[in-house]
Image: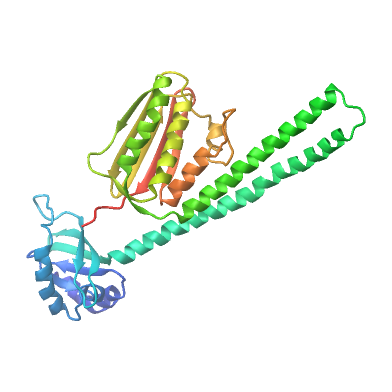
Length: 354
């Protein structure tokens, strides 16, 4: 190590030891020159010399760290270390030291099980935030149809009690009944959405391949696309794109968005689906050549019950965003009226199991 580091070794050691991440500094020979207390704890050692001896055994189990021809490059390795009671799953992050006076690697060591637990807690927190927003929206949304039903029931009661019943009276009765049926349907959709969101918050998670979900979605879209003479193009990575979540709900979320894209194109046009992964984030792009979305409507499309279609319920995109956010992801849209829209979804990947 550089002699300048030794000057501040005591206060620096105290600072490094209180961190919750293990730190190893490997020399040019790949052996530990330095370790902090959390690193030694992760490997079941109390002294640095014990860790050096333990590292020689671990080093043989590790795959060769990739290099760029000049030195090691940053990479992450999952490792299982035997313990007194049970094995511990560790995540090792290797970073190169390319300083002229100090060559080697810094290794950051974290408990993989603790990281998984934190990610689960974050997903649950995101789901509960979504539920809170939903319950507030539904409580507000239920008032309007209930008030409308009460008013129209009073009007219907007055109409029924009229002594003379003619064609205009029957027309008024029909109108009141139609309003009641419409508001009852609205209530039913709102309650169905509430049940949907509750089911989403309790659905168990599993490792799933996002690429397989997209292939299923394309299969489901094909009949409608052929009927509308729309070409569907998709570009997926060759390797599986693994994420943690509910396969059914993610499929429904993507299906809502792609069906929305098809309905934005009358006859002809092109729907393009692209998926790529970079730095543990999967990005899904859904692009159509439809009518586009006005700037005014762009601010409303995620609102519950908002729709520009006469037969639409206005909950498809709302549900899609809730599902994506509950999986720790995000969704946004760019659109030009008359040219089409581009929906972008990002989701954290699960990585590969060792």
